[in-house]
Image (cartoon, rainbow, N blue to C red):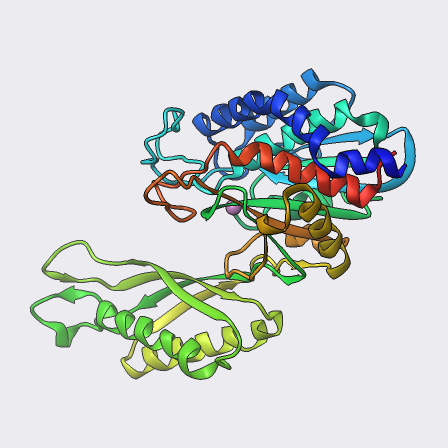
Length: 401
Ligand code: NI
């Protein structure tokens, strides 16, 4: 009914409920942050989430894969099925954020905000369970494992059947450089296809004093790295967004030995999936040409990663209207595509949906660090806003009694 809905939409009741649970949502996040687990290893994390969901009650819980959790909340009125997704995994980074609830697992850190996503979704569950009488249709809460590592947890969950009967799906990513409370939403591409390559250049090792008796894998590999930059700068349409980054270069053991081989890893990011037919052959052509020119050989493995996240125009517009009503026009900015990778695309390959961004940069802090940085921080004040955004979008997409 319109009257009740208007009460929801003006945010007052949502704000009251959320204010009551804010401390709990922050406590969830702090626990998750202090106990990070790597992709596909989210044993304690998923158990913790499962237990919190059991404590909330009123849900049908399942474990579609070993370290993921799905909670179903069926409303009393007929309607569509909306899925809401949060990822739960951390990264192999040694934390230097300085927060009181820093990682207790050496070398593992929640440096992308997935702890916040999980806490926000738990808060959304609690809120929607409390407001169940108003709910049309069904909400499925996806607590997803392994966003950070191919083949990605989303694809595994899809294979396990979680999208069966789901009509639409939404998800949020916190942003550490966007001020707390700002939201970015829009139609179209939001993230890039993120492919990886693993290359070994084989030369011939030997004494550093007698380079003529070797095939210097390091000298050749540096030329390969330099020449790979030509692909983006000279071979791809400048109006198309492509990134090619070499991220690992490993060789050698001593100052007097020319190593026999060099290992090079890197990533290719692109928004237009058709460029996946263009860039990998160019990459191999450069590697083949440079190594052949100097008598070296190579092994190359090119791995296609996640698809780009492409938001459905209708769902994005509906979510945007809900966010404008809940947060005001000033809080909303148009979304721009990023060349980050995000496996939410595996869900969007099944059903239309929308992925959007919520700022988590505390304006009182002098410096903000990017995602995957050891000093990465997310403002706790963003968490209740995430709950509100999920709830506002849910009621707008499913309708409200
Ligand atoms: Ni992330």
